[in-house]
Structure formats: structure tokens, C-alpha cells
Image (tube, rainbow, N blue to C red; front, side, top):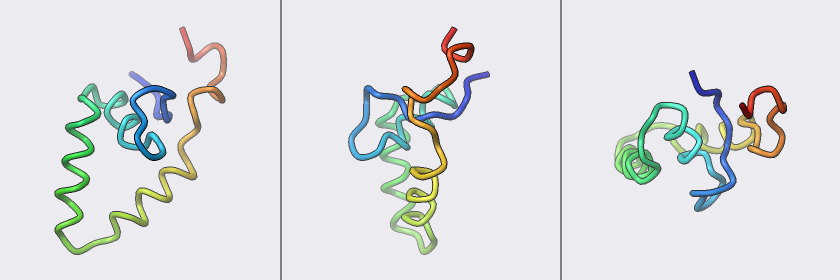
Length: 68
């Protein structure tokens, strides 16, 4: 199982959608489109994005044992 992190490549803004795509085995554009579609619905999508941006570690800060 992949851990949740923000990868260096495939980023557009912060890498949150790319990180979720890697974690769940999807393409980054699929997650981005789903996020944009979810913004049409009422809810705290942008707040959730900012919280994930803060909480998800960047790829460079992953432990060396997790990079195998």
C-alpha cells in the first residue's frame, strides 16, 4: 500500500491531487477533474485541499525506508 505524500512531479499547484492519485492508483488528471467537479457542489472542498496541503508531507521529506 502506498503512503500518502505530495510527489515532486505531476504537480500543478501543491501536489495534493497528484498525491491522492498515486495513493489510490489513479491518474492525476482524473483526481483533478473530480476535484473540480466537486467544487460545483456546496461544501468545504477548498478548505479540505488546504488542510491536505499542510498535512501531506512532500516527497523529499519521506523516510529513506519508505522510498524502496
